[in-house]
Image (cartoon, rainbow, N blue to C red; front, side, top):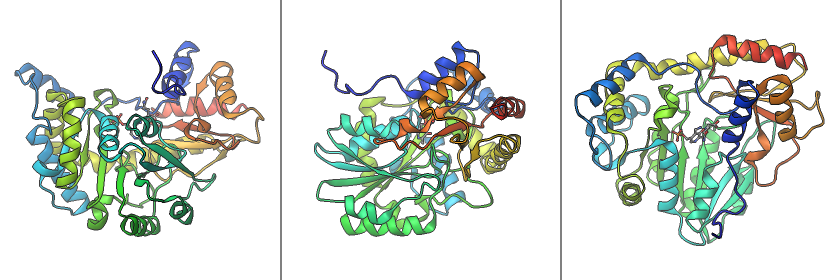
Length: 379
Ligand code: PMP
Ligand code: GLN
């Protein structure tokens, strides 16, 4: 069969986790928590399945979960939404991103993405017949050059995808970024896809700026989040998309033929979790900030340059003082010879610079982080 995506192979996360397992290495590559989901959540999942809630949910989501998501949005971002019109539950943020991209991208459309970019955006754009226009953010700041974005916009441009807090750079977008973004979106009548899966993991007392806070931005946006990050349950693959009514209608047309609906017991369990222990969400930033600091402190005596992590559960390290290897070769060396798996940053670029930067995931027990850091300090 002729491949529709001939340039793509296995994702870096599958590759690196496979190598980590094969070499029995500490796995700080693929982003997932080492700690378990909250007890209440697991109990309710079992409870709802036991009680017979094992059939399809409504396509746009179980009503209790839609309602709780709307409550969370009101509490966090002071936005009142009508869940029946605007909240769609999906099988992970990955599905929400895929569906939103299919909804906005017509054949020949250009969608602007920022490199280093999360790996699922571009294949979804290509499958919709569109073209990803990559704009690179430069290390070590990974700031967006908005005049460059303005120059890239033309008649074919349809949407911009943003991601804050950002995977893999661990940077957050600032108020000035949103001002520049809004000007461009309005001037050129573009749509926005805002990947906010790390919305509750922003550090140093600097709150996450959500597109949901700004009515003019939200009016043209698909805002996407993931329960996997929020409740330490990446394996459940539960997420959602919030969009204004008309955009949600387009989103739902596609969602109903991708998955139709998501795992019912998980939806009901997540609704209970938000209703009864919603405070978990507010503790997440401190929880991960402490993890970040354990890792950063343990690396102080290493020869790596530590880049600032403003959010997410990732930390970037520059290894140019240690090795001349390119980042893929360096990560293979780390996993095979040092016993520690990381992600090379170059895989997230169209035209990768030779930056010599790797990404570590610190969603791990403190002991694991210290052990990994000891290995890195030996280099
Ligand atoms: N976007 C970003 C930036 C992510 O890091 C991830 C997960 N690593 C996703 C989307 C996908 O989330 P989910 O696992 O809920 O599909
Ligand atoms: N989003 C996770 C990461 O960035 C991995 C997701 C996946 O394995 N596809 O590491």
